[in-house]
Image 1 (cartoon, rainbow, N blue to C red):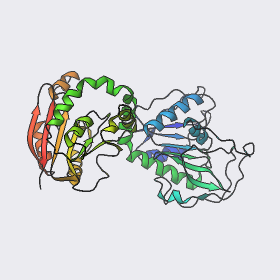
Image 2: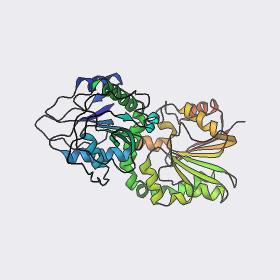
Image 3: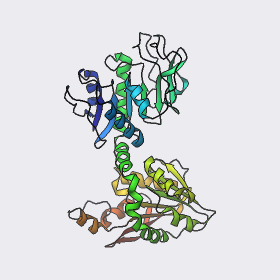
Image 4: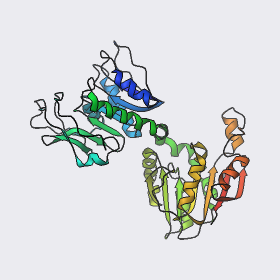
Amino acid sequence: MAVVVVRDPAVETPDGVRTALSEAGLHVRPDPPADEAFPAVGLAGVEGVIVLSAPRSGVAAVRALLRDALAAEVPVLALGAGARLLADAEAEAVAANPDATRPSTPGAITLTPAAGNDPLFANSGPLPDEPRPAYEPFSPPSGSVALAACHGHPQQAFRLGTTTWGVPCLDGARLGPWGDRLLRRFAALVAVRAEHTATRAFFTRQAGDWEERFAHQAPAYEAAVARMRLTEGSRALDLGCGTGRAMPALRAQVGPTGQVVGVDVTPAMLASAARYARHRHGHLLAADCNRLPLPGRSVHGIFSAGLLDQLPDPRATLREWGRVGAPNAVLLLFHPSGRAERAARNNRPLDPNDLLAENNLRPALETTGWRVDAYEDAPRHFLARAVLRD
């Protein structure tokens, strides 16, 4: 698991940074040579970004990297002048501060009430009362959450969304004990979120043309949803919904009094679903399918295409889906290609350990509360239907 560290190439990455990442099972992506500009870096294989300072050249590449990370919700920690790059990358208008020509006055920095619920700052302890690096004040990005303030100025630390932090009051070259603790917390957060980060980064790149590439599969999705046989007024989930191709068929099945919710962990996919008006067929929800924000026994049907076998602990996932399922809830697992077709397409043999193989999938479902009543691994589709036992 790699983290990109942005810094002035003439300054070595502090040992504390490498130590904090190493303790979390992460490593620093190789630095560019000291005499070269910061290169264009993609997010493939990247679980986090740390901006210690602004590089002397290649700033445009850094801003592009930060924009991509913001879009894909790759965790970002930007310190010192790097926080300004983060604000620029967010493409928000920087409001002119009346005293923008003067460095900020060192003083006591206090955490805001919002810091108490922040994933990175909560329980971090008070910032030490010590001189701070001078920097040109700027307005934090619109919509950001202020986490620390000094003399009424809220730009000392802020959060964008749920995965990006800017801390201009910290010097990336001299973090001190409090900064070291913050860096370790960030590294631990990156490691915990690595799986979701990789998923979001991959599907964010694919979201723009995903619907066009796979629009021909719409009839197969409609036929699969028809096998659920839900009644009018039911609540149905499309888990890992992507662009929401199953949502129109689910809406038709549950009728105007039913509820359809498309759930995906990648916001870019949900944005694409909205562009194709899938929100007219139901709600679009950014959430982890392993921790659904739904009450128990509240869902009558779950549709999921190409998701379960990609998850690290499918049995735990099936138990969570069973938790939200009402008595006799229907689960339909689907893929518009059969297992043999997918294996041939990837020039590999069928894997006997594949979760979707019947001798693996049936026990996984049966031991997590589901009763299988249909299993089809056909040349042109895969389908398994199960009912939640009382």
